[in-house]
Length: 165
Image (tube, rainbow, N blue to C red):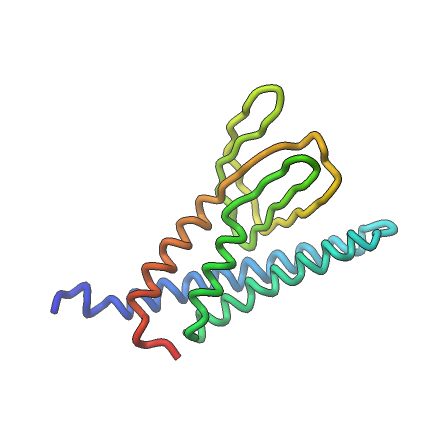
């Protein structure tokens, strides 16, 4: 048996634990920043409260995914992959905008203005979901860090398959 195959489960658990901590901290940070913003809102509408609820659910989901990876449950990898897929793409078109990041975003994107503008984007635990506003904003962005984490989760899932609870 090769040295790599003997260490594969240990490496998988170390990497998955690091991703678990990352998702846990990213969710807590996002939730904390978001809850800190609520008192500054002046006369929030029902749709604003709906957005706040959606953000809280997504950040709570990231926290749950982090705990699941740390506990090494069978569903942890699938849930964590869903969490990263939700963070992998951001867009804004025709009055609809979506951006969710629980942790870090290292993204590349295109703003569709009078001409296409390519951008490199960095952000820390951010959320935006709007419908019917920002009609002039058109962009598409890909979170490269989320894609990397998806790859690593898939790889460690296969290596740790026999040792999950």
